Length: 178
Image (cartoon, helix red, strand yellow):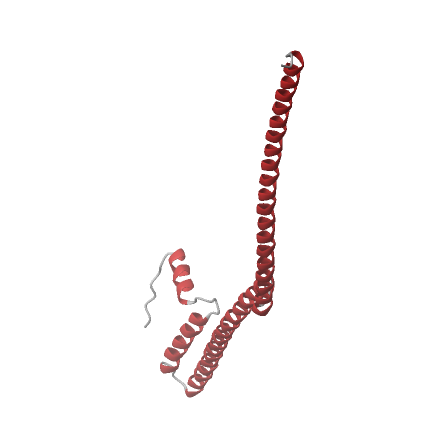
């Protein structure tokens, strides 16, 4: 004799959802299998027992099929997860490759650095040449200014001398000769 316990409807639904996680009805099949087994044990005639036995085999086959299906889905999910990880790595690799493609390769960069080094050296020589030329021009300008200053001094001295000579000439003209 089987005793049935009654639960509130929401409790029954909650328990069924917990037991039958994916909604394939496995818990119902197992319950039917247990009930069929109990009926088969309590069957009176051989014909009724055989019928119950066939139902049990059918229910058991459905449970095995459902379990196999669940295992296949599980394996497929694992493969898909591996596939997604592989695709994710490829996407990351492609993104890094795109970033790397924006930059020149090492050989090209070294060539550019060498060319820039030569250009810098050439510009340094030009700078030294210009600085030497500027220093020469400063010295020449200093010599020119010194010459101009000396020339001014000479002209001033000549002017003073000529004034003195004129004054002497004028004083000689005004002075009677002895």
